[in-house]
Length: 361
Image 1 (cartoon, one colour):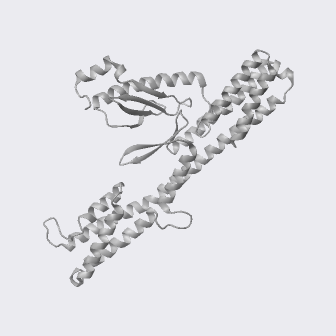
Image 2: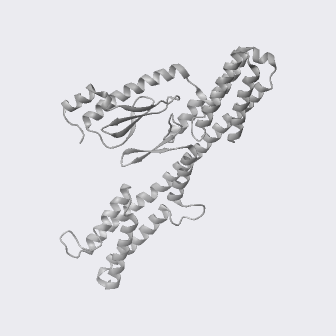
Image 3: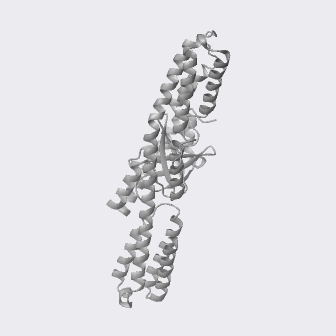
């Protein structure tokens, strides 16, 4: 049971070890930050945007008093971290433009190389965290297919189901409209149509489809709220049901277009990271082919290595993160060897870094 009294809340403040912050995912690009903490054995996640505003949370709902306490505590951690990262990395227009484009399509780079994508549902932000960029791209492709169908086929898509649902409910409405001449078979057919619609919409969460479902559920018996046969009232409900499905049908192409564009943006981001990797590999080739004097001039050598590191700092998504970390270690080792005058050993580390980068493609 979650604490609700002031006394219990004060206990949390006095003994923070009982509710430790589990991890802080610091984002060097200053775009989004994920903070996970443990409270009564449960993991809770707050994700902040670059202004320190919580853009989404995950985990069970906390008591309001406790929520506010942790919200303020975690925001303070976030803001402190943001200033630190700003001092270390400064601003980079090329990186920021890429991050801004991702943000425009509700995508946020997380420090662990995962990608957070937000979607709205009933006025709330729902977060989807993908382990790598490829998984996110596949998800967008599948989402577009669910909306409007795959390749040239629309069968099985939500758009197809909306057309089918509207057509079926029109059939029901026509039977109800001509109620006096409707046979028992016609009435049964209308009820079967409505049951089929209920089955098709049974797991829906969209407001329009939920409203349609409620109207159809209350119409199957063709009775009004008093239990009497009332085809007129049921017909009015079918009009409302059709209206809701029409609104959803109109929205689907807009959603599909947005997700399709987002998929292209993610593919463009992947291509940019690949280009950075190739650029870094060729820069290392230039360094390896340089003469001995180049390595002895430490200032020039460090400048070139820093240029490579600069290219790699915005390779910020999986499946590349672990590989880039290894490459950076090799580059730092090469720097240390050059400091000691061990040029040949430095070249081995540089060659290893170059081979690792080339193997990514």
